[in-house]
Image (cartoon, rainbow, N blue to C red):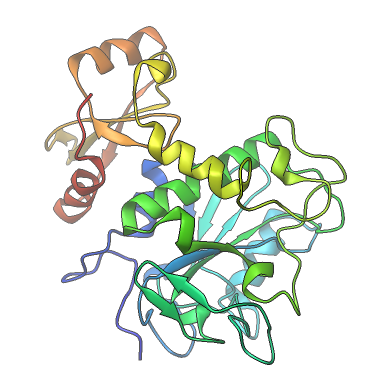
Length: 293
């Protein structure tokens, strides 16, 4: 049984998914029991990478998320990204999403060599976080808010779990080109995100999805972002502040908040989000921050 769970359980050095995603400034919903949900193999054998998908469906958020949780071969992926940028988390352990691939006879493709080692053929389910994203896969335009959320989500996951964007993030089709095409682009690209269409997403090589995520990770919170603070977080317990506040920037970077950041939040009319959390959650946010402007 896999030993790694992304729910922040005692003894785990990995922060919980809900804290990581919320820290990226994204709207997060959690399905009851997500902390203990996994495929039959339990937790991850290792957290080596991320696989990005589309759902190949045109149904509602509620139907897609219910399918991810309740499908006979579920849970399908660890989370669902909605058309409005909402992220629904439903599994902290290994999930079914990648299937055969990584150079196997059944899935094709090439061996996946990550920064932490090779993902064994046909075994990405046990080594990679899976993200399903709502799109029909036959030409539906990816909305700007959704693409922005996808980039921020993957940037946050890579930062929180120590993953490299150049080696540790793949499209489903890259893992198993004999079987899958996702993510598939719209009939035309989304404005500002040329890799999203037409046809399959461009993942890397200049101007691709991974390049956009890398830019968010590398961009940090500098002068060019000074007017674009997107979130100000004050951790509280029982309604009382329990430590330092945090600032979130468009790159996805989380930093310790300074007095100047607080003043900027006030000027931009960004609410000071007082979020109830325990000591473990606060420590995980501290681990994500580690940078003061």
